[in-house]
Length: 551
Image 1 (cartoon, one colour):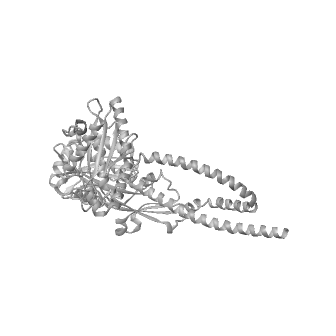
Image 2 (cartoon, helix red, strand yellow):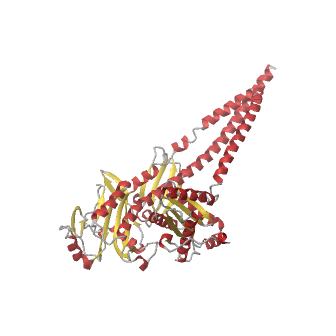
Image 3 (spheres, one colour):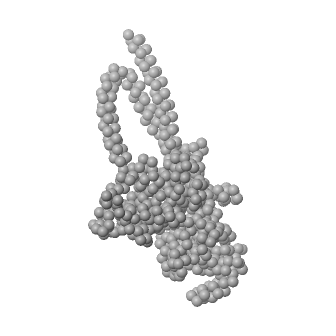
């Protein structure tokens, strides 16, 4: 019996070790799959944060563009106020400047006019062989002399009257900006701050002549639609600080990260093309390296390369020893099979009860979430929007503050589905919902799918001006996605038409009336050529009568 018992114990222990090895191997494989999935999610998150951070920083130039486009005479104090506000908010922005466009024939008259306020003013440029000496600018067809500028005290090679055309990379960017009517970024530059080298870029944004009290809208148009250019807004951004700022709020430690300018990579080689790089102590796991393209960054294409470090992978596999310990406990349990069988019964009953309770909680939670969420885009649905509109309307009526609606519809979306299929159509809706949802994040604001290809924003305590600004931002963001739409009769990419309405609730109007006015504004935008924003407040719309109430 003893021999039999020993043999049985030996067989049982051997079986336990074999089983433990199989379990450990299976868990290790599952863990590897889990780590790879988590890594791809983190890589996508880094790419998204960097893209958003770059476009947020470029908004500083658009703010100054709006200042100069909205007025024929902008003072130094007005420029400083707007520019310093941007510099204080964006630590990665080093410099902002304004330079009018001066033709060669107007140079003398321009310099004389500037000397009325600055007797030493002249259009000048730096001597290439002597960086500290400035001379009178060479004769050119056009000059871009800096008349307003602010910086944070870092080394900036600009002064009053400095001709931006003398800077060859910046001059090329200015030419492309004037041709396209949009923001253009230069190739990467190397600058030194306190003996430390940094990578930076210069961005140029054109300003156009005011027409009938309103600035020409860019909207990606070309030719005469842009109007007459009057000057250039210039900014300098430090890329490594932008990258570090973009990655500060996410779990990117342990990742090898590099940002590469693909145009410079082709023209100048890898040394000048690397905009930013960060490398942990341990080497990268190259077989899990990922590449992401960030398109249309001021007319340039950047590539984000991310690879996990060895420590990153090891840290996420550290739970394997715990799993092996659990497998060892399982082997010990096999040695006491009888007790284990008794305990298993109790454990299974307890687990079933617990699982059922947990499943019920999850089902209730999921049901509540589904009742308020659109299944395709994962944003608020029409039902939740209707409930929220009633609440905000009542609150606005009590507190006498305005409520705004922004309703937009994808242009020619039926043709898009016919051309690319409904799966691509669903993907297009999800991408637009994700992009708009990422920028509409003020507490109290609601972004919902209104129906089909229509989306709506509920903006409490928002006047018409703010609602129109947000609507225009949404329109530009959708267009910046550059989703191909060859069946559109107005553009090569997917665009939207937007209707806006902002009202202060009172007893003479209802939330249904406001929704009707917004819908009329949307259809007016479609009738006006699409890819534009129309405010009901600027039109003589009246709420349409409800036919059912007249019946």
